[in-house]
Image 1: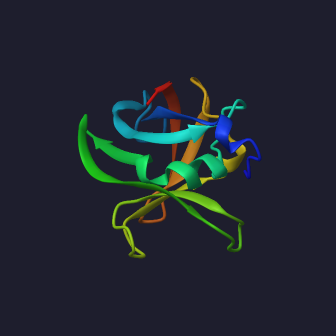
Image 2 (image 1 turned 90 degrees about the horizontal axis):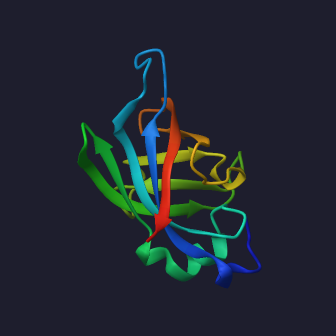
Length: 134
C-alpha cells in the first residue's frame, strides 16, 4: 500500500502467534513472529513509512518461545502476484525468507488473522495477538 501520508505512520511491535491448524488444534502461543513495522491510521503497513524506517523494521521468528531466526521486514516489488512483504533472514540472498500472504491488504489489529508462506513453501495462519508502540 503506497501511503501518501507515510509520515503519519508509526512504528509498531506486532506479535503473531500460530493459529489453530490440523496439527495444532489449539494453536501455539510459543510459535510465531514478533516484528516492527510502520502502521498507518488504517493499521496497514505503510510503504512510505517502511522506506523511511526500513533499518528499524526487525523480525524475530519464534519457536518454542525462543528466537529461532532474526531478520528484516522487506518489500518485494512486482512479480506475478504483485508486491509482497517478507521476512528476510539472510539479507541479500534468495533463501531464508518467509513471505506474507497479501500483507498489504490486511490491517494489523489484535484478533485479525494473516497467513505466511515459509521458506519451504508451506502456508501457515497466524493470529495478531498484540500491537504496541515500538
